[in-house]
Image 1 (cartoon, rainbow, N blue to C red):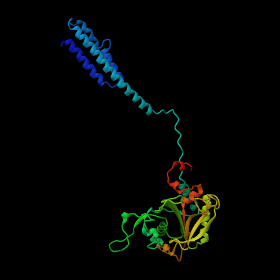
Image 2: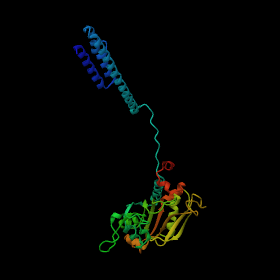
Image 3: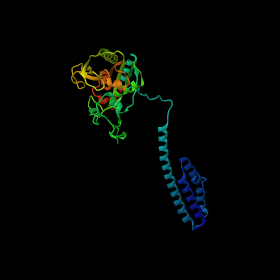
Image 4: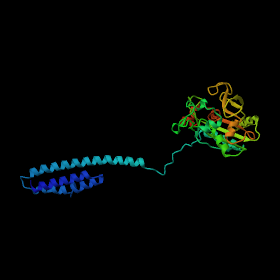
Length: 356
């Protein structure tokens, strides 16, 4: 092989290697000019073919054509690849561009959940009557949830069919045969009343809103997790009629009008005497519907705290009297806003929530 052929092949390998390493269209164009331009290295080498021996010119001529074809092919392929890459990069850049002169996107305003709204309204109503707002733990022990509230040892509410017990917190009996204090998700708020009594001296009045848990089937009027709102007054002289006036006053504040209520005799371990307190259904006006059934909605139990509950709270029932109510916050919200299914309030469905 002659020195001319060697030179041409070396230049070919050199430019092809550089073309493969080029990262931009601009660097590719610089290589084309450097090797194939009017004064490029390959161009100048091609011009030297005329100085070759006569018998070598045909061979070198074919080699020049092969080199030009191969270099052009590699150049065009590299240019196509870099062109596609540049387009993708330009697209990404445009997607990431932020034009500060464009108007901002309209953001929708959030709103409070209906349960939060009605809780806040009740808080305001009770605070205006001199009540303190109190909070208790969602995980409570059996002593506060049942024992202190005068529940018999074998009351059905203590069973797992009604209460969510926390299994890791012990068993019913220890090695000595003594009952251990089990823990559960609170099935009602009433246990917080004894906690408050132990921490405060009467007279006092307080409310305690919160979430409770029941192991029961769900339907339009029942949920496994729902909200209650309890209130307790303890002083030296409070009557049942005074408790009824409190109920009517609070409901009037919430609904903005007088609401028909009734107190029916009922049994609850923690009050004596006990009452079922109903309000006339505002959804149907007392005619009967899927929410109420017969025109009345059971809103709360109530009555004077049982003597044993007072004693558990460290209060002398011979000196002090009280009146207690437990409002079903979900049902109150259903009445206020015309909601016919309690499950909607715990669904997280934005179509429902945006109405408020």
